[in-house]
Length: 136
Length: 76
Image (cartoon, rainbow over all chains, first blue to last red; front, side):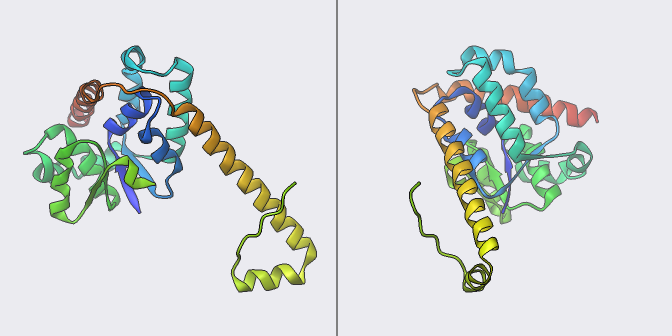
């Protein structure tokens, strides 16, 4: 199956040592996707994340590499085409979640992996909202 | 070395029994696959130990990063 990974999962993977958010994406057999800019923005915030993380800089870097190897980045050109529809689906809960829903629509995926309850909205449209442990 | 028995579909079993060279290659591949997977799990176990960080910290970063992603996509 094909799932979109929300940034909350990535951040958790880089902050917590004992992290199912790290194990799940790296060990799952499902295909994982993320919208363009997500990795870039995550890296832009990496210094701040490092300050709050239980991991060393080297461990964070190692995890980023392992996660990136498992995730397919969906280009902004594809994501942007579905932003309007995505706002309709999730905009009333949180507009910031729209790029992830737009990515889901763009790839014709099955659901979104996130800790964020707002994504339960997508279940009304036949998609799956799951937490990282459900990936294993 | 220890010996492990694995189950394979009947058609593969027939092929392996017919060709000893193929069987040897298959066994080597299986050992390599086991080794690779076990090593990865061991590394993951080693780096996923320890204590908890507040969920609030994660959600705080999540909001900041998602806000930036939306802004950049809207500019595009």
